[in-house]
Image (cartoon, rainbow, N blue to C red; front, top):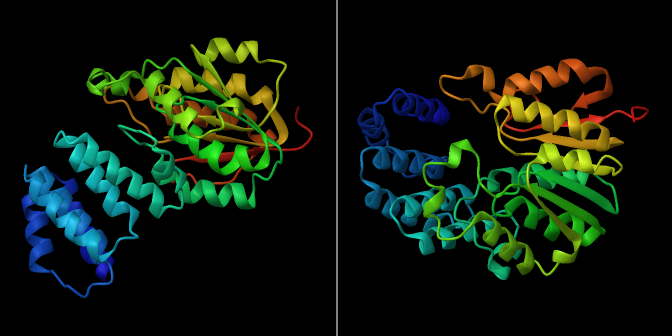
Length: 308
């Protein structure tokens, strides 16, 4: 019943009527609701959509004081602070997100992320690396490193403890979806990446390759990896090239992870990431096992033994 109420209000917001959603939330407000934190996050979204972001910050701050272990509250706070031009407060909130998710190295080491697209993945990654991706030592490859959030997590939680290596490929120029605001973050992506990786104390385990993934992957033809993360440019034409070039680099029994599988380009549906991923799966289906359901934002596949 509680989630039915939440979903009805969410639908009103998704339909473009935040005022209606806000009225519904406040009319049906129950202080003892078992989902009061998600309801507060939704109310804050409605307030932000109505231009009342300062009020939304106060609401989330009050809620976080009552529920200090809820990472989603701090994630929403970080987004609001960033939108209000308060980068220091946004960073503080994002570090609280990481601490809530068990990544204490982030606040302890002082990592700096102006935009963090990785935090939501931490619960799933923690599970996968504990239950499925067990290579030790482990050699990891990531396509698209951004400011180093996934790279630092891998160094802190996986590569550092197990031994092995991490190879990161990025142009550090951003992708098409970042073009509108990339110049206003106060540092280059590469500077932020370098600063964060150095702060792990394990930079010697990380190899940075600057340039197009399609060029570098051809140069890595003789290497093999246990885990490959594809999170570069999301246009289908780039995703399919990354997948085809990475597959021979993956050990039999190794794992490949696609990010943002449902990423869409308005007016260019042929370039939606799902187009490339569906083609790749149809061509190589006999060589892989899909380990996450289609509705998930990330697709984890395992290369079957015997396919090298």
